[in-house]
Image (cartoon, rainbow, N blue to C red; front, top):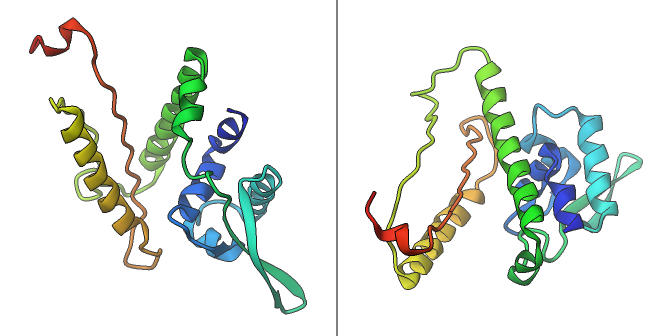
Length: 182
């Protein structure tokens, strides 16, 4: 649990997201993923995640009299194991979820504070859909979504690409009233 509390800070979460999918990035490259984060703040959070054992140094390169480090995620940092997830108390689950939602609200608030926004052109979307799926259908859907996410998560930032955050929350309704159709 302790490591998951550490990454839920918005900047740390962004660093983890940038390195997701097996990427190896330098601090300078990470700065391209977090262009609004001051460099001193970015370096402080990289150091924090490294000292917490959540980042590893893959290589060190000499560059103009200094050492440039290439970082990646430590094993099992990208997602919480099902075993660990099941061991969390209800209070810990609610705390994680609350922090996650708070970060999402912060992101949306930051978007709204920007000048010259156009919600339609920018593709702003939030919606909820009910789906009735068997366990097998659900697993197939998750696998398909994971493949789509992985395909596009590999794209690097450049002048033609706008960073777009996708947030997925899946909450099953279990019990007798789940199939009422209300």
